[in-house]
Image 1 (cartoon, helix red, strand yellow):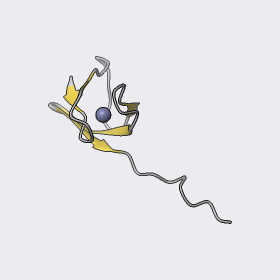
Image 2: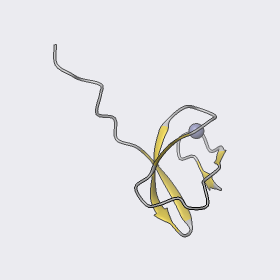
Image 3: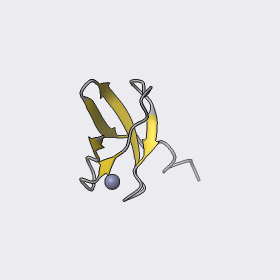
Image 4: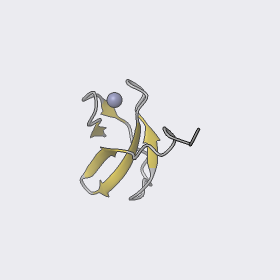
Length: 54
Ligand SMILES: [Zn+2]
């Protein structure tokens, strides 16, 4: 388990989670990146789809 940095909810991680893996918080729906595995640390994943040119 790790804490969602956005809403603070506990997010379940799979046992074979790897650094850099992207998961989605079930509580707030934010995409999170696993920045560290032991102990598990999550960070908000970079948003790259907001501004695709108009
Ligand atoms: Zn969350």
